[in-house]
Length: 330
Image (cartoon, rainbow, N blue to C red; front, side, top):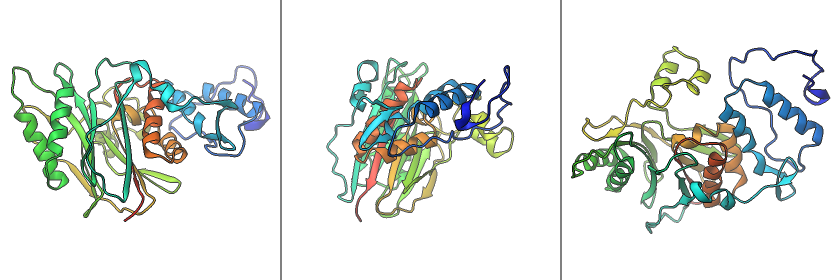
């Protein structure tokens, strides 16, 4: 195919790209003064079509549309972009946490969750469980009501104590659910930004920290494929497409022993932005897209809306939840 002069030389007819053994970010320009020109746009589309990427990863490149700037106006290859609210109608409608928990004055936050374009029930949830503590829970239903598990786990996480103690309280509360049915289970992540700042998690829900122009995950997935990656059995890029990628090795589940949560201390500085999310978000939007979105939206509530909206628009197959927390003061 013909790539043109922007990205590379003209190839002979019938040329096919070599196999790709690792996923690398396409060199897109997330922020800039002008939209791309027609030739660059065509060349990038040709390149994306030529690369043997997962379909959702190819779609994820489009999620950068609203952070390509023409002055102060977002553009999609030169076309105006609809506001996030217009992407959250119908099946992807956002539900927000409404409990009026006071938040520390040095923090600003926003959260959004959606059942997504595929699922009929939203088993995700989030909450502010103390003025400096934020939680995201991903309910696991299968043949059990995962939304019930999410509700009970969030109530347990609101119990006072260290993040680890909150996880144990959530597990105990789930075991005590009355009734003839089992309430399923959940993965979770808790971000504590008060004294002794830390991240505590169970399963594959994540916390990212954006500091300046960089983003980094602060959690390590409790998942089968991540264990395989760490032991060298598979390459990291294979974990994204492995049929076992959704199998978690730690979770809060009815009728099982308490999990062993992961806990890491967190260095917190004024200007940091944190993202808590379920796998429905990070599986469809890669780190580069997450960074671009977090840089593009200064308001944390708008940032959470945009993250969830983009994941839904890019074909999320799971519930999607994002909580964005900004550190604005001591």
